[in-house]
Length: 306
Length: 330
Image 1 (cartoon, rainbow over the protein chains, first blue to last red):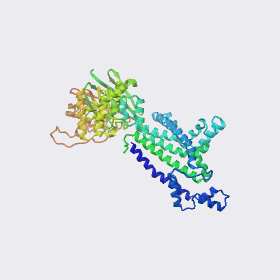
Image 2: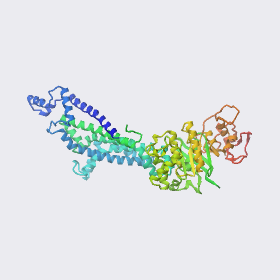
Image 3: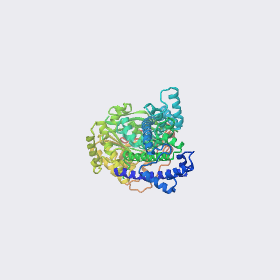
Image 4: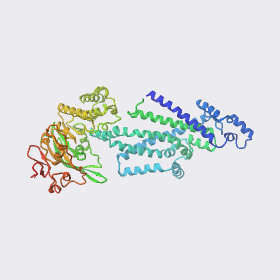
């Protein structure tokens, strides 16, 4: 098992390298001069030239790339052009907020998605099932930004029961979590429902009933452990998407996380921050996938670690 | 009466997109203590549905048991509470299904699966239940049974898995084992091993068996009595030897003629029964075999024959005709 994890971790390295490379060259392709942004629109050509030299932008691209990689290996993501702070420190300050939001949303979507999906499957083709299917469809089709704005309008503006923005108390979490979870709950619900329906018609479930087991035991010991295997993948992916989805949600609710920081940095053309955030997002996504694979190996005995 | 189990006028229907399918249309049979009863018929003749209905294992919906009684120990299993029937399933009457590759839960250890009926019905602790599981796995000839309790189903071959499923059925010492085509999905050599194994265990434990198959050859060496089903009905019933020596329903005769026989010296061609078995969208008011029967007379298409005794002891046939003489039955 340990060997498996180590091997999978090593496989992460080339992916991160590719991401870093892509991000670097992507920014070289974008028109506009970072030195001008850094020095300010009003700066004289001499100042801009000095800034360019200090940032190493006067060097050939390949040299810049090499220095960038060297810095990355040391965990240095560069300095913000706008406020001169280390990008890594900005990330350290903001990332926990994003993770916390995504984590709470994932846990809640998994809980509600699985339990509602289970009810839907066990009550299949009844009015309950149809209603839940419609709700799931709504969850998938409603745009995040619209849902977020509607929540703010109703709960904060009209009813004044929840704070509009910020992250100071638990009340601040309610609307962002709802917004971020809507799509996930719906997707997890759908996959749980179809997965349970597939498993429930298997022979071993019929045999479990023929063994004289109570229906609850049949469902929780025989149906769910099998049905949840594909659900684990979806939950993991949803967590990954939530890191990205936080961009919209955090902007709507002024959440002090990485998503909002990214939007602000893009607007300010703060190349270093954007670069850093992208690398951190991509790496987290890869790591989440790795964790899903490991969990997979733990719950499905057919997957061996070797 | 001396019957361990008796089924009376069992009727089961399924709701489908095309309409109501009448899968079982009034089946009655009895099983004595320690007896082996073969139920024979083509796919879709209602043999599996009959036994699943007995234990109320028909998925409802779409299935529904609309009539009948299944008497076991003086009680009608179809009228029992859910708890009542659960105490019988797996403990007094257990089942083995056709496909060993799908009959085991892929994410549960063999030991847990085999011992589960003990835990549920007899409240045994994990350790004791596992010990018994190891014993029963040895009985069904799983090598190194004790070491394999913690293995998962995918670590077993098809034949070995079927042994595990059989062990699971036997662990509570049931009075009746229902085997629904337990050898159909296996290689011929493994088929023979499994059949022999069940025979041996039956003789050791003295349980009754209901053996469902479409293979007359398997039943010949195993069953005391055979019931032949067609179109959701029993069309012939007889002690095994009598049925093979003197099949009396045109369908049974057709089945026998499609079977190679080692005990008949005269060389003959194997024949097939023309046509396909019916999908019954209504309870047949006439003989369901009439469209395929080569002895058919006009009465067959208008009236359904009852299962009635003919001549010899225990031989019953549902046919308007005596195919040996060509005369109509009384």
